[in-house]
Image 1 (cartoon, rainbow, N blue to C red):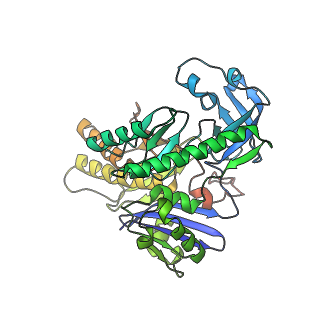
Image 2 (image 1 turned 45 degrees about the horizontal axis):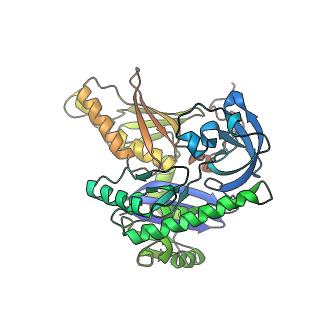
Image 3 (image 1 turned 30 degrees about the vertical axis):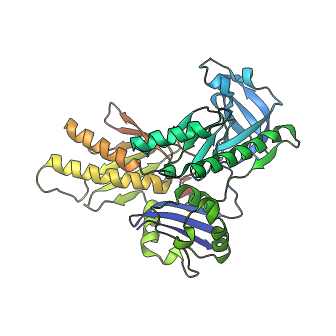
Length: 408
């Protein structure tokens, strides 16, 4: 069964997505701690760094935000492939409309862009692009042609957009209404360029609950469980806006608590462990460090049935499925290196990579398999927008500072 749960207790929101009875996404949020990814600000450039091809921008959120040159380029320059320096585009004191791409991480300030995107339920508005794009998870050729034809028909002023996966077989009228509403919102944001004060928050991204429902809710979700009456009523009021048929699937249960849901609690605990046991008896070890995440695969207690090659392939395939789930559940971003058990047969290697690609395709946050290094390690990149799950639950040890070792 596929479902979404929303557990609100003492100001803490815990929201999860369960697919095929496995917890695949989990988010914890203190209602008093507002996240800023997706927020749009009117900011002021405080320091341009030509040597770093970047600038620091005050958006009024404590730490100055980081703006890279490619994220600062106007549309006409971005698509000209012309070599451009950061100080050719912006100067100290300039006021910009920017959107947060990544939360502050450690000592680093938030990462921002001038290329605003506005997500809707079925499309994502991309005003910095003229292109009409379609989710790569839509594979039906006839549907792709239909969506492109609709896109070309409704597009105005070269304002591009992306059809989301949920756009599959939806009516043109729905796209037109949402597209026009997003353009109105974008035009309102653009008008804010002329008004003081600066820095200023112009647009706040939806709160966690509404983000998850906007991005995940679809016909494949069988139910949504919530234990807060007020939010239950709020969600029902949004049914006509972007949550079709929600009333049939939304279940209010004041006694629902994930602490008493054994399968969910054990999945969360598993996601906080270094070692994850596979059903066969093999296991994977996940180590998150600042530069990257390393994942090691081992046969463990699994001894196979016929020969070594078959044992190794079966373990690796099972590990690939679990790794895809753990990456998504732990929300691991950046560079990910996987050390699968060595395989000499090229056909087995290809089978493994295809399996890993298929499992990673279920992830909303697209992960890219870069390839295999000369040392036989599989290299993956995944967009990083915030700290991974462990940062919500685990604090650095005051004695070893996270090294896991102390002086004897």
